[in-house]
Amino acid sequence: MKHEGTGEGTGAGTGTGAGAGGAVLGVAVIGTGRMGSDHVRRLDRVISGARVSAVIDVDGERAERIADGIPGCTAYTDAAAAMDAGDVDAVLIASPGPAHEAALLAAFARDLPVLCEKPLTPGAESALRVMEAEVRLGHRRAQVGFMRRYDTEYLQLKALLDGGGLGRPLMLHCRHRNVATPPGFTEAMMINDSVVHEIDATRWLLGQEITAVSVVKPAPSPAAPGGLSDPQLVLLETSGGAVADVEVFVNCGFGYQVQCEAVGERGSARLGDAHGLYVNAAGRWGGAVAQDYVDRFREAYDREVQHWVDATRRGETEGPSVWDGYAAAAVCEAGVRAQSTGAREELTLPPRPPLYT
Image 1 (cartoon, helix red, strand yellow):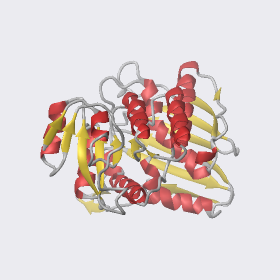
Image 2: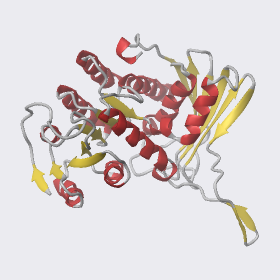
Image 3: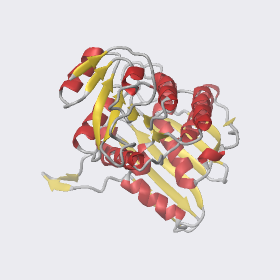
Image 4: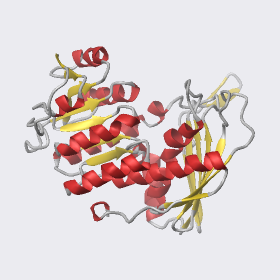
């Protein structure tokens, strides 16, 4: 393992990945917290066609500890220095949201492929700047990490809706429940960190943009920390006349639960019931409830990253786009306004650039 500090940007890397006729892709992972560390493990032990060539974190000691366990991996505290290394062909961003814009712009400046965990950026204005930079580049370089699009049940529901099996979709009923919130969790985070997934899923499943957001707050649960109104009901109206309601309950106490029921003209379909192993014993019956998103969507994350690696090695960029990240950020901002005002918040997105059509 080598360690590097800061460095000056001199251009794209010249490693052995996407530009080498399908050789192994050298990936730099930015951020080594829970999500970043899991992606490092995934790239190192699960995914084919890629290797972790660099890890970047402002905590240099943590980056070094992770790099020490991976042959040929270098630890950095500066993302630009890593991107300029000769063995870096692509970038996976798993740092906190406020750091995403700078990392994305640095990757675009070097024409490096990127998989960016959600959010693309924390706000619509910064997301628009990222989109404008990619449009200037003239081709897509970033895939946004909305992993539900790679979950087996969500893929089945998408195929059913696209095939007209339920007729015209009328409503989505969604639930997003977490065991508990960490210290410092805010009401805005209920939209930006949780409902953002339902926002993207609604847009993707229905093929429609979201045009209005409303938020209703029942009496808070006694389990909610002081000052947090939890649960909430978020209502999403779409350009095609469909409506999605989202129950977001981030201190439910019993597990991590994501469900979605699509109601169409000719039927309905529901995912997330966790029809796994059910046990009958000691006078009781039942099964397990996942305790966090890493367990519930482990296979979706694996499929997402493998898809990104495979497409990158082909010289392509697929999956959720920067436009999808921007649209989600704009809807989240409207949702946070609706939380604070209690009013129905309308929004109109600008025309979608041809790059994303």
